[in-house]
Image (cartoon, rainbow, N blue to C red; front, side, top):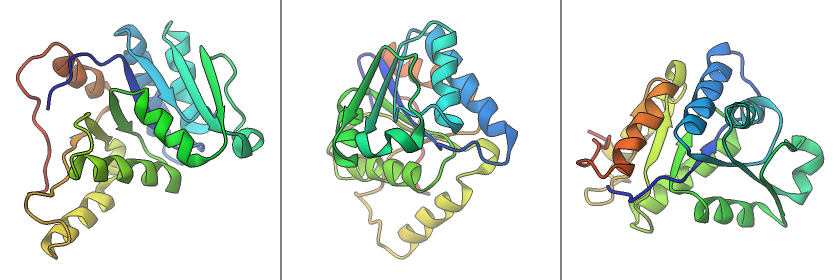
Length: 197
């Protein structure tokens, strides 16, 4: 899977912080590393939780931030205002498509149903050949282990068939994300893609 240049990463993550302090730490680590590498953030626009942490970290380190938020969620998600661009859209479908169009890679930090839904959509699009942008699961403190077990069960039951295996990469630490994508950007040999064994 090759990409000429990673200019922007779409980060999916929770509008809450979760109980484990490692989640917020990971969001800050990722945001700072992105900015230092000159990679912009595209995300859901919120100022709360992990969403706020990653955006503030990118901004504090001098990076660019694009927030995309549906009008119905403006009051609920407390948009982060120190952004280069805040785009208010009509609905979730528009938000997700714009996030896709403006991003060169996707990273899922811990989050709730919205994070899960956005991640699974990208896995499905890769599976069906709609795009070949990298998808990375940041499995901080084994947060995504149960999802990975479910994916394996889907394959064992043949709902995920040979030839339709979703391509993604798993990292255990947030500081692994940017170096991994830098390899893609510098056109080095294909990075290893985790597939269901």
